[in-house]
Image 1 (tube, rainbow, N blue to C red):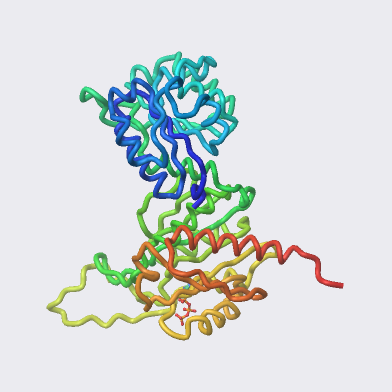
Image 2 (spheres, rainbow, N blue to C red):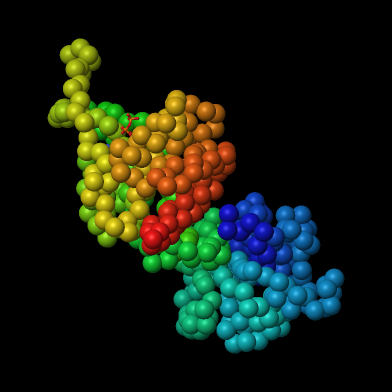
Length: 403
Ligand code: CTP
């Protein structure tokens, strides 16, 4: 994870959404970050410091004057890899934009050179006020990053814009900010999920793929600066900025991939594409009384093999191989047969691996690299290893041949 071992100052200011900062704190810590909570006086009216003492990585900081450290703002500001303010009230945004430091949090904001991410939350009237808009525009111009609030229920039962963004989205934005931008400038296509091949209007042939590994690859590639097109059969949330193309069948997936593949630097076929589809789709639901239907199948287009056959120089192709036995041998065969640069093989018969799980264990095979085993871990970590292998392969391919 990009947050692993990183120092995050979590500023919490005084709005009703302060209670959601608890979730943000927990998620940051779960992702491996060292979290130093800084609570304003207003925040303390909504939520007790004990909660953050317990969930953060160090005791919450609440005062410029009564801290363990004699100059807490410079200490916190200088040591931070990221300062995240969630929720950020109109007051904090205004003081920050004006360069006024009247409490510990606003002092930290002015004392840090680390990237700053603010997640505003306030009532709609305040959020839409010209002064708040201007202050945010000023902060953005100075390089401050903003997680926009959403529309929803606000304090007092009103509904409107100004509701704190989802804690998961806030943490994802933090991850994105801290990720190395080593894929910047690259166009990456990722496919995800199992295709559905219709038999009649209500039935289809499919497989157990959940799309989680493909979506993790898309999220990780986007976090590392790539421009990502995700061709997927599943409705799962994705990182903002990803171009999502929702498809069902192998034919639709093929069309979407081929439409974008000429311009792509990297294509990762993580989808479980059906190898066969019904020759004809019944126009009406097949009825039981008519007896067991005979469903004749025909092969689908092998997207990866076709991409391999027309691969242009500089393009990197990654296939996946879900195997139940002779994993490495079958995967190597696929690598060569389909003209891929890398194949990511998993033993789907092993426990907690592959389909539907949140974890995976793979072997990454390449034409000119030793096999790399990635032991059981979460799918985002597998995604990181696959993208590292993609970069290493691209560097290797750029090297001039030995004289
Ligand atoms: N794939 C594809 N198009 C297909 C089928 C598969 O692009 N019609 C891709 C998958 O996305 C995956 C790789 O090919 O990246 C491996 O798919 P798999 O079905 O396991 O390969 P097969 O050649 O069909 O081998 P097997 O005999 O094991 O089914």
